[in-house]
Length: 166
Image 1 (cartoon, one colour):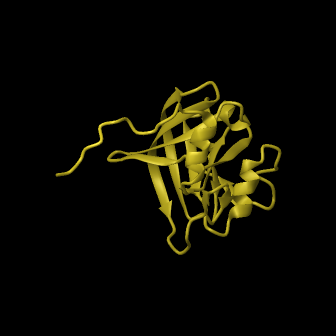
Image 2: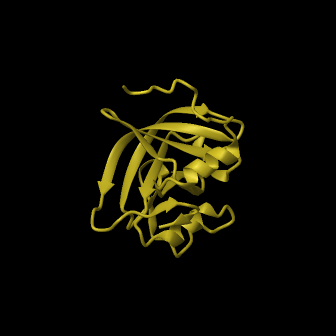
Image 3: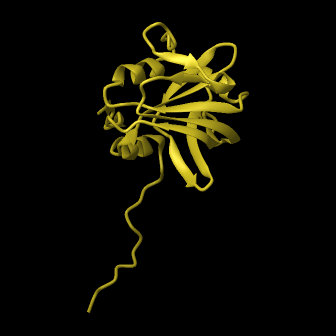
């Protein structure tokens, strides 16, 4: 006879530190999200997820304190650029709020809807923002419908896990 243990599992109250520790153990693809206004903006994200394939919908999070949040909260379109395994420098540049993100060292152009398009990425999505949710005092969840894609399959992805790029 199989014995069934109905006692509750040893869970503890959720904390920011505990949640960070759990997600530090997972590996995520690294993307740069861009938007255009009078000046291009962009940031590194590991929160891009595919919410649906029919119709194609993605989500990502953006810190409300970031410079990019102000632009993304006004704009209707974004570019999502998944980075290749050899593009750690690009990821670090876009993760640095003080960096010259669109300087001469970056190969990019101004695409549809003034979206900055990064060249030479693993793949890119051009998206129409359909909804924004203030999920906390510090973060906004953006829901976006994918309008077009550019896929390149010759290289592997840049990933982030255990507090470092892989």
